[in-house]
View 1 (cartoon, rainbow, N blue to C red):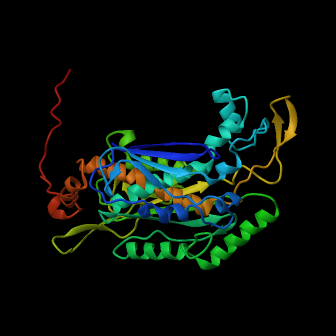
View 2 (view 1 turned 180 degrees about the horizontal axis):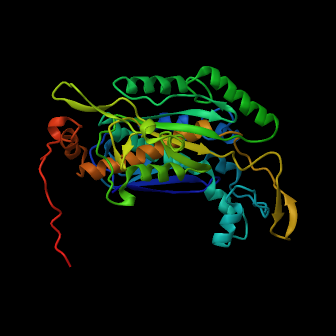
View 3 (view 1 turned 90 degrees about the horizontal axis):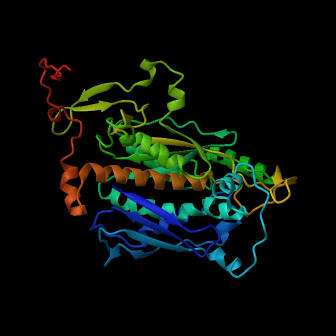
Length: 402
């Protein structure tokens, strides 16, 4: 239903993103995207590139008169660093960096210089993804769905933040988002944020890099998005793939999935209760250990996606490798990079979650315009007892025998 493509290289003239399948009638301007573009550039441990780029998005298609048209939305972002590369001879790069796509890219595509893989594999491409995610976030906001994130771990510093459920969950998660934006590592716990900053500082002094874990939340998502009937329609699986496709992310879980694997079922599954609501008795959960999903379908609880990011592959301290030009052992050469990109990667995680949720919402509601989607959203089942009539009668499958 919804898809996007990005194009461009890390040090090329520009990045381009095209978002196809987006409905018409959504008010949209470049200013709607700018906050997230700026957030992606901020974070303690960022490299010198973030001091060069001033990412701004220009629409070149699909947005006319300040509204989406239903056609593909084309977005363009200049690379300011291109001025430092334009018209210059590029030094050969023949020693692959362990952990990067240098060697694997050369094996797959037969490149005769490793920079051809580096330029596209670089996380610079995520600026285009954040632009796409910001457009999707703007549509989600029309249905009171919001996406946020924070960092829970960098190096040895861990913030123990319990999953939230119930009536106050949305308000409490919003408070975490606000607290996270108040510091350079985007951790909502100020004391742990100081520890994370120290961890990054020590890695910088050691000419090394650090990874960590970030958590992306989606609030206000209605129950019933996704499906259990096919593997590729399970929305939790689509989110795992979307976030797992971010550069340097090596593990993703829905809720505390790996922690749940060590527990018994009675300690994991979210019990169901009936509580009086404004219009009719409603089904509720008092816990959210499932991270907002059952059977690949949203439950109506906050969606929780956790991602583990490995340390950045490019290190000031050289690693052992092989010079492919002569087959001799060689040390890697440093390419300007981050020391820790986890705070910035969390914003990219938000973008990918927003895209996957927008895709699922359009799939559920149908319609070519925002005006068509609104009444269909209002008519969705919300988990009230009167919306779930049960026959309570015996029945048979009814298939004929061979």
